[in-house]
Length: 155
Image (cartoon, rainbow, N blue to C red):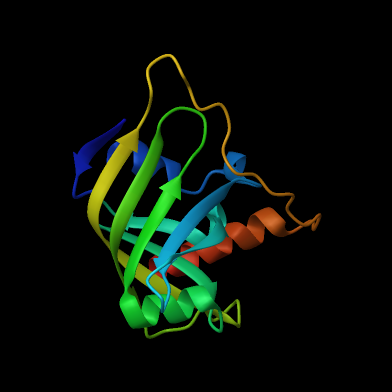
């Protein structure tokens, strides 16, 4: 059952959205609203999302994607953090940042103003895993992820 936590990120969520190598290969789901009013889901890595402060989350997506188009046109978004323990839904309004990511052409950054934070957990029925993906086997992948988060926070 969902429980309203408020209109700001909790310390637990802020920690989850900070730079942590153990999130490599874990995903965050981003839900936007398409032109027909239906939910549209995108999969982001933790390296593409950073909490600026308790009221603001910055994230990036492909500039030419349907997700970016939905955000530009309707601005509504929900980030879903689903992993071991409680699941979190973070609802808000997104605004495209005017400065593109310099080190990663093709990506565009958005700032999500947090409007509602929900925690979902069922007693005696724990969530044991979240959405996972196999990251590319590149020697600099962790460093690139850290660079994306640092650039998002610096915009």
